[in-house]
Length: 368
Ligand SMILES: [Zn+2]
Picture 1 (cartoon, rainbow, N blue to C red):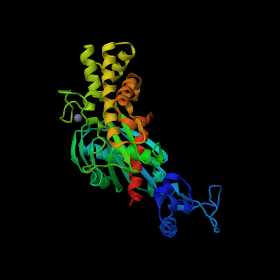
Picture 2 (cartoon, rainbow, N blue to C red):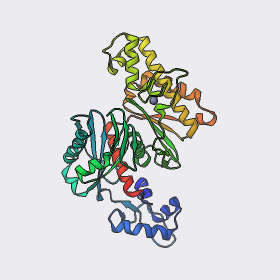
Picture 3 (spheres, protein in one colour):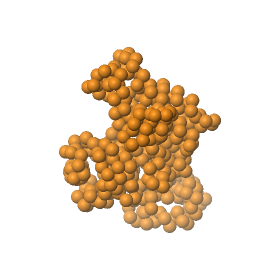
C-alpha cells in the first residue's frame, strides 16, 4: 500500500484501493498509522483529487523528508555515497577512495564516509544500504563472494552496523540498481523488466510480476555466467569456462586486446583508442564481446520474457564499439514474440548505484 503512494506520487484512497485490490476500509485502516507516524500526509484537495461519490477525496502523499537514508556503493577502489530522502531523491553525495581491500579497512572507510555525509541529516537517518558486486545474501546481510574485493562470507551488515549504529542492508549492486529503477526509474509501472550492466562485470537484475527476483539461492539473473562459447571457451574467474564475463568483462577485453596487439601494457582506454583508430584485430575483440553480451541477454529474454531490457553500466564508454554486435546477436537469438522486447541503452552515473543501495534500505523499511 505504502509502495503505491511512494512510487506513483499523490493518489487518492479509492485509487489506492483500485491498484492494490484492497477494500476501501482496509486502505483507510492501513493509511491511518502511516499518517500518524508522519510518513504520509493528506494534501489539500488539489487538481489530482478524484471526485468521489459524495465525500471529498484528499490525495495522499509521502512526506519525503520524514526520514533520510544513506546508500553506499562499495567498489574495490572507491566508495560512492549518497543521502536520499524517502522518495529516493539524492540530497547529498560524496566519494572516497578506499584505504585498502581488507574487510577491516573497508568497514572503517564506510563508517568514515557516513560521518562525512551531511550531518544535518544525521538525526533523521536510521538506515544504511550497501551495495557490493558479487554473490550477496541480502536476508543474512552477508557478502558470500566478491571477486573484485576478494571477499568470502563477510557478515558486512553486522560489521557496519556495529560501527555506525545504523540499520544496515546489503544487496548485490546490480539488484540494488534494479530496485531503484523499479521504484523510481524506467521500471515504474512495468510488470516485468530486466536491467543489464556492462563493465568490470556483466550483471542483470530481473523484475517479474512486480517483484525483484532473488532466486532460491540469492543468485538469479547472473547472465555474466551464462555459457556462450561453444566447446572449450576461455576460462572465467568463477571457475567455469565460456561465460559471457570470460569474453566481455573489462578484464577479458583488455586481456584479449593485449594478446592481439602485442602490447602487454594496454589498458581499457588504450584498447578503445586502438579500436576507434581502426585496429581491426582490437575491433574484433570488442565485436566478440558484443556478441557474447547479446547472446547472454537473448538467453535471459527467452527464459524470462521481460517487457523491456535496460542496458547500463560503466562499460557504456565502449558501447559504440559493440552495440551493433550486441543487437545483432540479441535479435538473431530471440524466439518468436520475444523479438518485440526493446533494448534500451541508458547511462547511469555511479551515484545512481549508490541511490540503488539507498532504495533497498527504503524498501526494507516498508516492504513488510
Ligand atoms: Zn563465469
